[in-house]
Length: 548
Image (tube, rainbow, N blue to C red; front, side):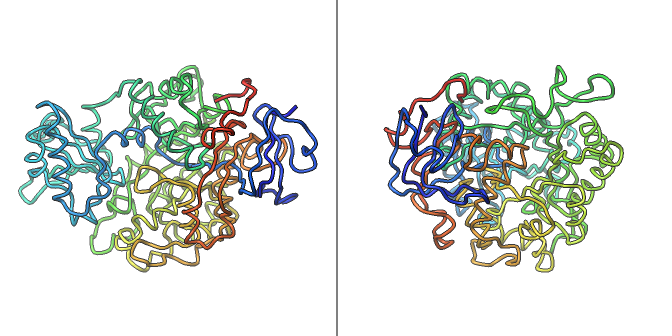
């Protein structure tokens, strides 16, 4: 007796043995077979899908779930096209707050606005209240005088963290713009967030994710540094799960700052916890470490100056500090997820990982380079030799491609957020969004950008890096599973796999590329249970031995 039988589907199985199927059976949260393997079996629930398209559940290999959930309760500045629109939103929110209430917004784009919001205007619009606005890239923010005073920036009593930048005007006065690690000066005033608040943010984000077909996400940095929100951040995920408000599988990347010495020259979390601890619904993934900034903010570490700028960006910390942290984590059995966008940061990361593998070979460690935003041709072979998993975000090309191209110049645009070159080098490229940094986050939108590689201005950025729609679908299914070391558990529709499935109203691999992101998500299943979809599907029973 099956739990669920899905009939009359056009299943894209992502397997070579049987690329398509019409019937899928589920028992105990796993797929038990397709077509003739299950067609004659009884089921507690039988759903006629009327020819809808079924694919493995989508996975986002790099997102910021807590941060996105928090942003849903903040001022949304993403639609602002002029500074006045920003200031008007700030003023309206401030008017509803007490005199010491914080106005927090996110998603502004200095390229669209013609510059960053001005500190004096934030003071005026906020009526003297603390105003904190986060750039869409997450690598910068602007703060009002009230915040800068509290943080010790105005009087210069607070040292600037390594890898951070405090912007100043010609007179040496802080403009309010803080980049990279300097954002910790504001973070220190608001963190740690209460676990209850973080759990609520997780629940808000998850409700959006399942409507987009997401069944697995990787949270790219928790617990410490400027990317984390609380030393107890993992507890917020446990709380959301215990409440039944975490309907997707999650892999957590602890920030490098929270790893500490243990015994026998190892580093890790308390009790020796490291990559792999947990279960199929919530587990610890790689250690996240920042080696540089971003292209749009010109803080990525590059080997040649930014176009029309002259700077070479910044490293996330002293190179020797980064080296010691990565070597210690590798030695202690962690997978590494190194944020490296500029080619100089990629060089540094590869040098350290080569040393790590030479000192202690771990051939299938599946270390990752997050973003790999500007990768030179000579770096491709080095990445392949180390079995690196590159994690680029194709949607960046649409969202901020024009800005990035302007920052690095035409000669380096072919290196920008590669895809085809990684595949040709023998690497697997998972799908990811970096939401809410820049990207909308919807997997189908990411697939479209993998196929088209167009910017908002209509430019095609490095067209040789395009892939077809089938490869784009593979990125968000099988390759994302591989990046997490779970290719034998999810990412394909075949017996034994988790019954994480998405029901679509059209086929991503057959519609024109311009229509991919318009495909509707009819239902999203996790462990065979509908987390989004019609009422009759949502009532399907489930074996609670495997439940989110």
